[in-house]
Length: 243
Ligand code: SAM
Image (cartoon, rainbow, N blue to C red; front, side):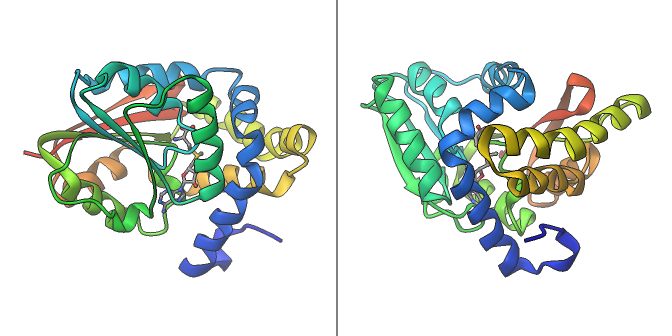
């Protein structure tokens, strides 16, 4: 298979994304550490710190996969709060559920299989929604953003952690070489899956840049939108509020 985006329609993209994450689920955590040299942990830590979650709050970790953010939120919101780990992919959710249970996190986490474009939650339910490295996989991103807006409480916030556009030409070149050449080879070596990691590189290249994503959030109603570049813009954390 070839995962070139230009040739695929929406239906194909959805089943392709499903295949990719089904294939990588078992090795997902180790690959994250290998590919990012452990730096994804810093990006996620910054996301948690920026979320400003408090005891008793309701958090939705959307496209939450194997639950790295869920684990941290679960401890912060405590027994009176609730964290919903939601993902479209049952294989990723299963790996996440096993991992969180092994960590002893059982009392305040729900697991919900769902498409970000059509969230199965009532209006105004969550104080915080996070989406880490998930939005670029979604076929209709504006639809997903509108759906997130709907389930947030007034005063609630969305945090989108996602690959973005490197701020310097030099870094951009190094990064392209890394993601289009080294990354698929590492995928082959560690997970015996070159294609999935080729998809990853392509999906990163196609994803809207910082200002575009900010406007997309504003278009569906988010206010006070900001973003913070990390690692030279390789990754950005976008934040927006529903008032
Ligand atoms: N948030 C986790 C993290 O940062 O480690 C997992 C990120 S993983 C790169 C992307 C996740 O997005 C996958 O688990 C995938 O199944 C999920 N995903 C893809 N399309 C989705 C959609 N339309 N709705 C919800 N989740 C989706």
